[in-house]
Amino acid sequence: MRLNKIHQDLKELYKNKEQLSTILGVEFSHKEETELYTKILQVGQWYVAPFCFEKFDSYAIKLTPNKKLADSPVCLRSGWDHYSFSNSLITFLSFRQLKMLNTPNFAQYILDDWQILEELSIPFREYTNGLDTLEFLNEYLHNKDKQKYLSNPAEFYTNVYLDFWNHYYPARQQKEYVQLMHSMIKDESYFPDFKVEDYGIWNTRAYNAIGQRAYTLINIKTEEKENQLWQSFIQPHGFDAVEFDFGFIPYTTSSSFQLDPIISKFNPELGYFSKWRSHPLYEAGQILNKNKSAYNGHAHIKAAKVIDEELKDPVTAWNALVSAGYWSGVNFGRPNIEAWNAAIDLSGKHGWTEIYEVLTDQLEFYNYYKDKI
Image 1 (tube, rainbow, N blue to C red):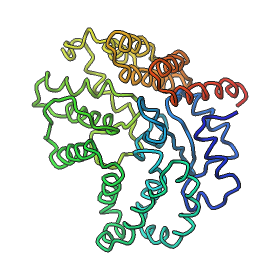
Image 2 (cartoon, one colour; image 1 turned 180 degrees about the vertical axis):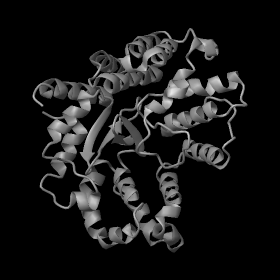
Image 3 (cartoon, rainbow, N blue to C red; image 1 turned 135 degrees about the vertical axis):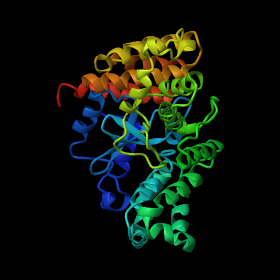
């Protein structure tokens, strides 16, 4: 029984191939994969499509409405949370090499094994229609102007990181995200004027960073703060959490518990979010504020239905269902099946065919193995 089509296809393509972990940095099959993947689903993380492992972590496609799976971001699992790792499945192997470049002298190791890397990556690159995705990596490693960065990652890895992201995600949203983060990192008092911006795959991370900044600044009017705090709260919980002291490189220790300061503002006595009291997600914020550890996501499920059917905003409805799944997993260590089924219905209704297939495959996988592991 397959977990999902992407994982099954890659598993077959790399069957009996050696040196994957050493050269690519990941494995597409694992002797305990059934147990590992079942446990991921058991803690409620049905909203990603896992497809490979490294020694301590697993990588998954972030199921993203209105995007093909191959074009959707890949995230790295870190406990209960995930953070964005690459802008798409197509570019994943290049970003996996980027992760290795955070280690001194690793650039030379990659070059020494370049021919093996090219050969081993061909099945993946052909499968994702990304045969040319290693070209930038090769050029970068041979670029004399970049050797200062590559030889001293302790000081310059952020430069390398941004070079890769700016190349592989050459979108307006990437430029605006980088500009925003540069401004906030350079000046701890910088607070952007409120405007609902589209930061592409960085939406959640950008709004979480702005939300943390809004909370920490004292001399900001309540109305200015609450606009940004609300935008952070309505992002899908469990992804791209940001701490008070943030940078471009995600902290692996970050989690959506960093939302606690924002959730605390749902205390009615503080006078925040008055303009959103009729919004379907306001109730979820109030419940989380009163007793976060007992919350199973039910208010987010209720809100998702209204957001989709009445507000005609299926993407925000999807995000609400993801948040429901996240809190059920965090607090009770089990999936919220109602949220899972609602996500299946939502994806079917709006023609998100690949997401629908992943959700139904993984539910079948979970139901088959949940009592066998």
